[in-house]
Length: 453
Image 1 (cartoon, rainbow, N blue to C red):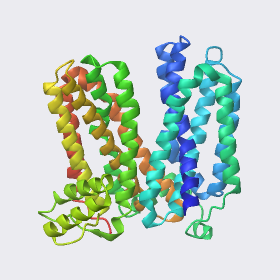
Image 2 (image 1 turned 30 degrees about the horizontal axis):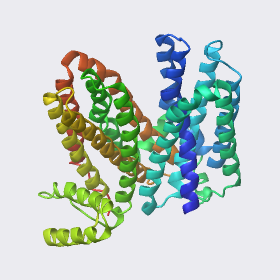
Image 3 (image 1 turned 90 degrees about the horizontal axis):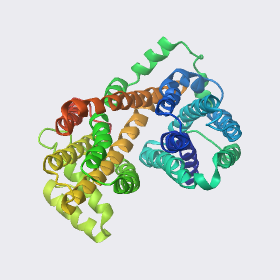
Image 4 (image 1 turned 45 degrees about the horizontal axis):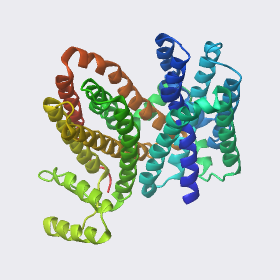
């Protein structure tokens, strides 16, 4: 299974490169060339294939193998990178934009194939670690392309940069070509049904998968308050004379480290869910938060401290410390996120400029925010994958893409509105709205049927 984890990690890593390239590197590089803000902002339209990927997901699901699609799409990325190496943005802006749009198209199809492959390869007890690899590797690829390559861009130059990316993608093609991808289910299972590319029938099949309606509603709203806070709090600090250099270090580098740590912890906690104890009963809603805190402390301190906490847990609840149900774990993390947001709101109401204590508190709130966000993201993606595994194999990649597209749509739509909310209401009242959205996601989980133990 370690070979499977390595393969998935490599695939998700290279999948994060186009996003980091276009969100971190290109806007800054384009501006240094003197391109207008209009042209730079139009580059956001290059993400359209990611929103529309659900429409071609059925083709990936029902035609050819996942390995064939991976070879096709990553091979396409090789050619796109080579094409970019012969162009220059200042002279061939529209051609560069077209090639970058093509890169996003290939990357979005690759995403469908990789997710479908992960669903087929991972068992229930491996989903937690598998989704940790997914989130962490994708973030690392994004950071490498958005920050690492930007650092050395002045040494490499535009053309050589894309040549090196083409070499990286070529190595990935060779790894996939020589890999043995054996799904848990026989490929013949997907052929037991006739191919169905009718959008309406596919949508009906997706919605009929148990838990899909609940999951679709949740992924649409669970990031709303968090998106507003993570995007606006650094700007609040910037307006309070928090230097851009400090923000770049703490909100860029350190926060990403905490986000990756949170994603890793989320996978660890999800890996215990098979031997879980239900806490989703009246009078025990708060216990989940305590269990999460115990698990986090248990990972951070030596083993003898874990034994002490096991004894405390046994005396308090009369049972050994065990993993939480996925839903109970998710609800506990959402409560912790609300607590973190309350801390930020109180900090904003009392913030004093040029005070070491307040600056340290602000940095602490950013780190906590990204740690919890990483935890919630991994747990949510794991629950999405568990839901998808209930679907017929012929629509599994489509089902997961459907949920992932809704997740992206929820974040994109609200992200476009948060600036207007702050301009209209001010930071404090806008953050109160972010808190209300975060609390709404907790309420949404209350009537849900607990996950299978």
